[in-house]
Image 1 (tube, rainbow, N blue to C red):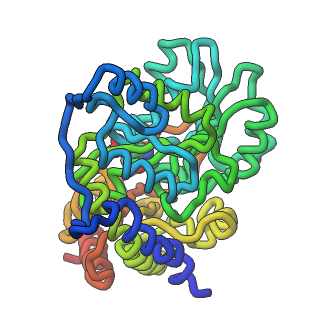
Image 2 (cartoon, rainbow, N blue to C red):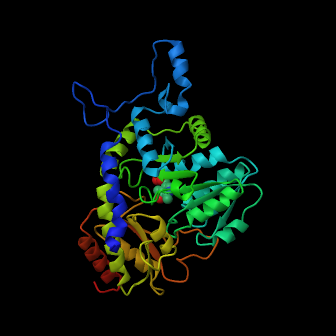
Length: 404
Ligand SMILES: *Cc1c(COP(=O)(O)O)cnc(C)c1O
């Protein structure tokens, strides 16, 4: 199979389910194609008894008040759980809340948590501030550490092995099945931030207990929504997660759920195109004399590439670039400023291309792929023509080299 097909096949396979799931039930008098948008706080019942009975069904995604979710939220929860391959999903207000909510739900004072050094930096900050204040200690392990090394970092009170694959900014792929075995052997849970791998990495087939999604990225797909999802695969975990989410007041707004469901309809075709374009741009960057290393899991020299080949059915639209030693941060920033098709901005997974410097903004306790060379940045590849994107990068490199 060509590499172009390897990065896009998993996305293409999703498209029928994304088109046909979460649709209204057929009615004799005709059925609207889309679910109605229900906004609401108060829900009224014919009797107190009906209200009490409905309240007892909160683990069945039912609700007696808008803070427990609304109809489109629950349809979106079902389709996210299906794509992830888990039993139940809880929607929350952001991707970051999808990281913090299960940490709060499954950890207690006195516990220990392991996180990869390449973890999404707001998750690290949460561990360093609120988790620490509540008496949870966190140890950071190198994302490419051998499973045995990670095993040796376990303490008797380690309850969560948090993973993120690929890692933020440096894109290391982790050996999730082996890490899951290590965690399960001592009764700990494996949590995965699966935002990059949504739909192309099946978390529960690979031993994950709790999978995290920023729906803000590929699913909504249009840079107009902030929402997150947490998916589990046992009723025991579901009860813990659902209770904690209700207690923390976690939900996603009806409008955001509706927009995310609309975005999901086209996620398969968008990402099939974007993953191919991202590969084309990454391979073009590999040929540039200014580039030291392209950090894209589908490229053979990316840390964990063999694991990507083994475990993923596609690749995402986000990857990293390390420039040659000797190029200054200032020169790279001028180059970034001279790009015209790449927006300078946070987030990724939308329909448009984005660029952000990563050097200077990376916190690491251990040596990493971005060390020892020049400055680094990351690209999110959108739906533009990839030839236009490489032409834009070529003119920016010309500016970097003082040729314009
Ligand atoms: C963006 C992102 C998040 C947070 O998502 P928001 O919806 O922006 O809060 C979490 N994890 C990863 C890996 C991300 O890239």
